[in-house]
Image 1 (cartoon, rainbow, N blue to C red):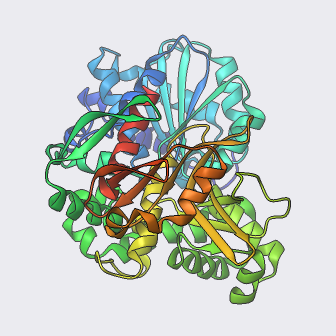
Image 2: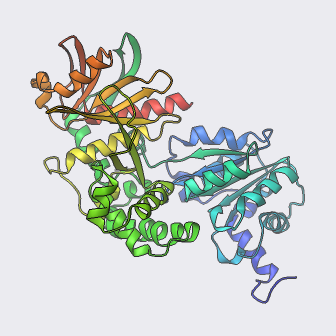
Image 3: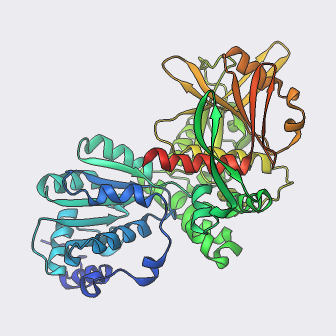
Length: 480
């Protein structure tokens, strides 16, 4: 029996028909169909199309990165593949009209609304699934009960979704992460790939796909646009949003994540305090922190700071990067760590755009490069920092072989041509390479490219924009 607040069934059926216009028109909205597809779509759609694999697909990612549009593009592809329109269903779980309904009841109502009573060969999309209490239990039941139906769910509170999908859906769920735009996608969506060309580079005696700028001045101009505005597909195509990034970020991302998603999922009480803490981290993206220093600067106790960082990482707003010493060994006690925004344009929205000569540009370039690597699966990155007597050193980015406890490679991120002209000043980098038996290292520049051997170490210099593009492009290739 429904409670006194329940909505008449016919009104729910009307809403389902409204959300699924292809039941009548046999096509998705024309404007959405004409939108460029994210490059991640080609990785996502095979999981959707494979109805033989009895697993639900969990499409996760931060807000406004295009999850709902990707679902609509998937529906378009299914229609193009000849799937009957009535066998495809979309349900926006965040609509209050569905608040008292479980997933199975919604699925039954959707079949009734579409006129399709068959329970085989269907594709069902649940958008913003985290707003349904115990969603993972409901979805597990559906996967078991309807083995010939494909279920796809999306949600913005990504880590909460991942936690619940791994705990309750083992063997029944497949996670697919849709991150903010890479610089590679940023150019692709604007049809600006002509600014760069592919080639093969030799690194540590092996061939790797790499890129070179055909017009480095324009590429750097677009790179700065990416740093300031580039994480969200909508911003690329809307000058109105670009001119008022603070309102877009505040209304659609900050307010909904910090003031609604995280408090509801994690029981956070002081949401304004969390908001201020995030702004503090965003302003200092790329900076090294310690809990002691953060507690002193924020006035918050360490336990609460650790929980807030977990919450913000859960929502894919920040990434915590840990430190190793000059021998690539982990510290026994965590004395410091760096925090990066997962998308550099978040900082622009909260404060102001940066120019190529601003003091903050170095940290934002570093943030942009880390953001590309965050898209890689099963890769944990570190930075190195040490002090031997009066001598201190630091290297910006390292990937470590966790079995051998030795670095695969290291990278020094610079927004400067100085070290291209004076490589002998990269003393920390040479010391780290020497201690870890690395014969190669990469250094980024503003617009200089070349290879030098100095003190027995081969230094590969690339413009930061080219390197950023290369990491994003190669990530797509690796996952294909």
